[in-house]
Length: 168
Image (cartoon, rainbow, N blue to C red; front, side):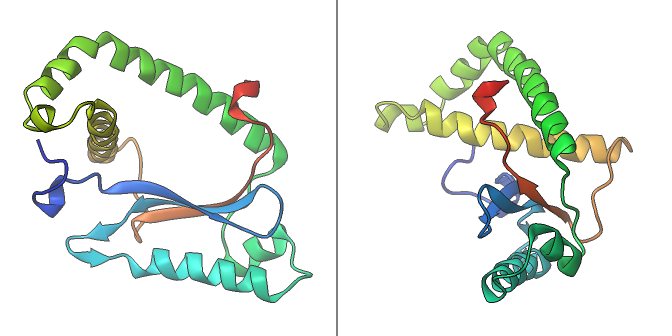
């Protein structure tokens, strides 16, 4: 099981990055692949850099203006609230699956060389286990035609934090 060293294809290849914008709780979120093979997806990096540059350069710019300029979606307040509620529900369902599989996940960890030299490396292991699991889930859903991966291999939007997750 690959954690620190190994082939590039074995790392979690998808992820979210949140770039803080100059408005309270406002972020440009990007989600997708970091690389294709050994090549960084420069369009993702360019989009993030452009958003930060535009937002810092023009003090009169609003989040909506930035979204229009970048041609990225901006979530409305009601959509953001619905998103947070739904994600909390789905996360609870996924957590229940991990809890049901607790013994097999702990057994997998116990069989790794990492357990012989780390006092408590389970947290690091589980972080990567989860990243690998959702990368495989994304690929399986795409292969089954249940989701479409964008041509540039990432998506983005402007997000406004509303309430802490604990409020749900």
